[in-house]
Image 1 (cartoon, rainbow, N blue to C red):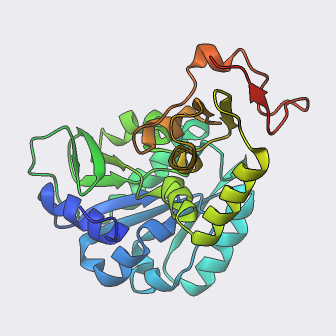
Image 2: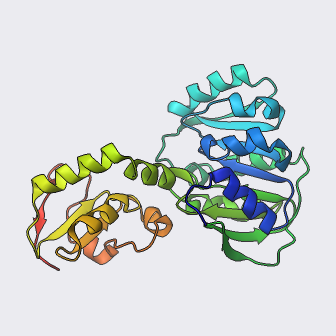
Length: 290
């Protein structure tokens, strides 16, 4: 399928594939569903924006009474949802008292019960379809999906890092909904990193960096904080097989969501290096071949 398809087109293709006309949906990145909300509002029942760190209210104005915005008491999402609420009359806000929600936070793990109770109570006001497809795991339009539970469909888009961040909340949600967890390189922060890596000026900067480092044939290259490996694939295109390459993602979730091939360090190998957060860790280092 073409890489030019929007996330909205891919999500609609998945809904059609699963026989879903109307679904509940939850995401941390409103941009992943903005086009869907604006162009196909009839496909969405209840909408949960979970700790968003950026939110353009415009695509959700006609759906305001179907929107629940969840934020921490501290962190960027609080102000984001306060500003959005002023433009979304009828939308509901819930603040997680005492919680600081940052982009890297695991809100579904940190506030599992409170989050799922508010999601369940809010979404119960709206009608959504149940899937007709008997498939439990699959992929369509380059979006993977995993289905569990029963009842009206709740589509869980990845939190900032990966679909697996919803895992602690799924058993509670699956008591009330058919939970459809979706993921892939066209959603969440993976899509942001992939888009950035395709920008010509960014690629030019990266080529200049590699030329400055000037790796010698046979030297190994370790990319600490490689995300989904976007730059490592550019590195492979530039250096070919002259250098061994390994990425060390700050979160293993990136590795699971990364496009293939993904050459990340195994946990055993990663433990032999200093933590990326260590003050003594160097951002660029030459390593012997492993």
